[in-house]
Image 1: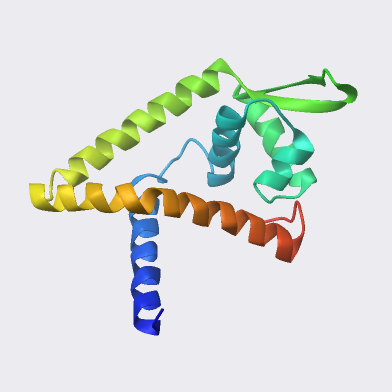
Image 2: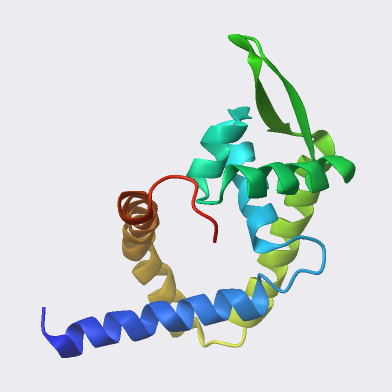
Length: 158
């Protein structure tokens, strides 16, 4: 791919990230890491603390502190792993599920308002582009996680 083509992709990704940061991540309630933990647990289900720290690339001590803060807010619960009583698993609470539903709903409303500023033809073009780009972006996120593990090792602090 030409430098110009790669530059256009990079700039589009930066613009999409900027859009998300300005409109979806302006949260006084939770840090980005806390949101990532809650999202991961809501998708993956109960997870060992060590696996969770590796999944979102933070050190185990940092993850322990984050989980303690989330526990105090009744957003996660820790229980003994039924397969190994020495290990701990973490899961989201119903309060966290409610919070995630509310935040997703707020995000959808913000995006709907923003998308309504575009002409219908732009909305349709974006829908079609994201139909194709969405799975690719998901793979890029997965690849980025794998590259981070390969280059920095598991559970490095952010």
